[in-house]
Amino acid sequence: MHCDTMSFSEQITRAAEGVPKIAVGILLGVLVFGIFMMGFDQGHLFSVAQGDQAYGDMWMHEFYHDMRHAAGFACH
Amino acid sequence: MKTLTFIAIVLSAGAIAGVILAALNQGVVEPYLERAIELENKAAAAEGEIINPTEYAAYRFWQKGGSIAGGAVLGLSYGALFGLVFAYARSAIPGSNNLKKALLLSGIMWFVLYLVVAIKYPANPPAVGDPATIYVRQSLYMAMIAISGFTALGMAVLYRKMHSKSRKFIVPAIYAAIIAVAFVALPPNPDPITAPMDLVMGFRVASAITMTVFWVVLGAIVGVFWDKLKPHETARIKAA
Image (cartoon, rainbow over all chains, first blue to last red):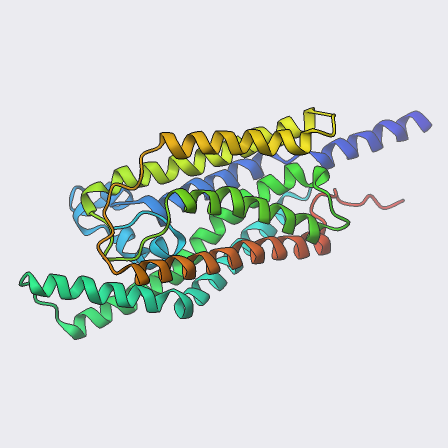
């Protein structure tokens, strides 16, 4: 009984220390997609639906224009 | 770990800090942006371009809305990164509570991901920047963030592996040496500064102030939420 309790609490400790893979995946996804969309897109995302026109319109670039400048990302 | 609580804490903290950043920018950074855009428009008008003031005002209103959305997206992204680093490093960061730990980490991440990068490639207002060099400038900016970020990550691992007291000097010295090499090896921003220097410098200081506030607020919110909701603990098992 005592032994059971020990291994059980060990398991809890181990589970508590790790970061679940699903959380790592979701947060890395948010990081990469968000930074690309806000700071780097020059028409790439909209080109999926809009074709080459998107690289001329650069909607994401224009929409996030002020924050790109203010946060130090390359713009213009 | 309570997975959903953890994700909710870091993403909501990021979004809140990002919207606060955007709101601050409206007062602190926008005046410089407006001045720079005015210069751009004057230059365009001198070249024969016709700008309809009503249409342009509506366009700027839309862009200012985009700036708020941009703050939220930037906040979500950096919140996600901050949360991951904090979750892995929390037990090793000194501090009597999670607020102190999170503030210390956000200070380090501000230094590594913002300040060091901004010293090499400082922010520029509109009116500075050649659209033809955008991909080069983006690559250089990303390279500097990656070099500084991954070097710092490596240094954190090294710091934990070293046991002598000298690690407090050796580890930062190695980081500084690698950053110095990167500063020399990476080419400078290829674009000449064509706007008045007082405008450019005023803009850079304003941008640095709000970005610094952003990192402090991000760390503070994650720390407060973490202390309250304790996402690192698994669900308590009640005695039968």
